[in-house]
Image 1 (cartoon, helix red, strand yellow):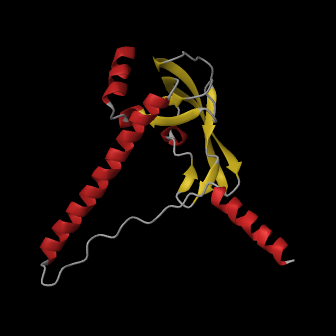
Image 2: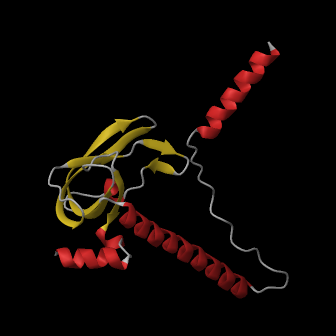
Image 3: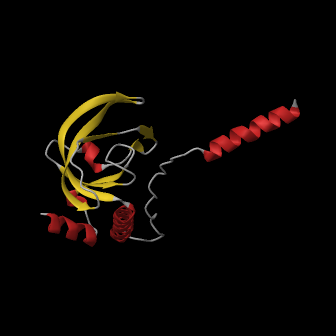
Length: 177
C-alpha cells in the first residue's frame, strides 16, 4: 500500500513538473522612498525605474522579433479580412480573425486564407499573444510561420506592422512594397 501511494505520488509530481505552466508574476514594485528623500527626488527615481523596465521590455520584444525571423520558414504580411467572436473555455467571447497573405518577405509564398484565435487562458491573459487577434478588418500584420502552411499550429508570431523594430524585417517590408 505504501509503495503504491509512493509511486502514485511520484507519477503525479512528474506529470505536474512536465506540464506547461505559465505564471504571470506581478510587475516589480518601484523603489521605496529613502530616509530623508524629497517627494520630487523619489518621483524621479520611480520614473527612472519605470523607464528602465519599459526599456527592458522593448529589448525583449526586439530580441523576440529577431528570434522568430531567424526561426521562421516563411514570413509574410497578411491583412485581416474578417473578425468574428467565438466561445472558448474560460472566455465568454474570443475574437477569431481570418487573414489573407498579401506580400511575401521570406520563404514560400502563400495565398490561402487562415484563421487565428486564442487557444487558452492563463494568469497572464489569453494566449497566444498575437497582435493580429486584436486587429480589425483591413489591419496588416507580419506573420511568422514555421512547419508548413499558415494555420493556428504553425504561426509562431503575428506582429502589427507598426510594431516591427528589427532592421532586417523593416528592410524586407520596404523591399516588398
